Length: 260
Image (cartoon, rainbow, N blue to C red):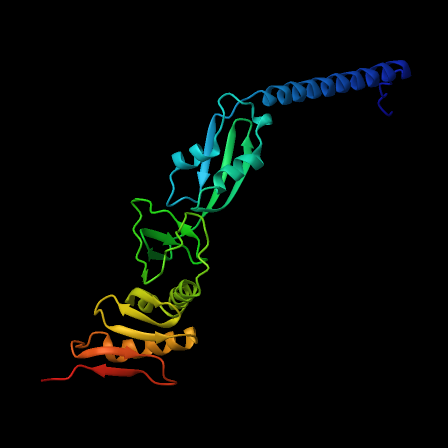
């Protein structure tokens, strides 16, 4: 004989199903109320922490000072666009991204302008590879960068301005291209002297040998100089070299001091 199966009356099934729906409805109400309370609470939570990434020249304190955060202002009332504009007002900041990272933490990601050269004018100025003037800032960071001299600064220079002088822009192109050719070549150049539209002159770091660069064909000349330097100058006696001239096609001219 087959065992008898227990049968739940239809009325009891309906009551059980109704109870499940009631409990699910109450649970949903509880979750919704919790989320509403949390959202309401978060609207009144002030910023308690700032995380800053991407800085090497500026400090975290510098960035927080630039942000101009008012005390006890709720996170929800923070104008992130205004904060970002406050930060990029500093000449060393190229880009800044400000985000809410938690109910009480702001995350700031910085892209700094890196000094590409030291510009000698009425004072000393860093400039980046775009020609943006950066204020001289004492820092633990050391910069092995060339000096650009001979610039006529009678018009004055201000931090944050872009130098539009063609000679300075040509000098920056030499610096940028020398990095692409080789690290050794980049570190060989200690100074670029601009001469008001005339031929530019480079000076080597180790030997001080003047290198008449001329104007134009930057990449071609630097590749030629790099090959010549490695083969004939590096680790060689250079006391008798008066200057090196790169202005001639497919050759490097070396002028040597006369021996008396």
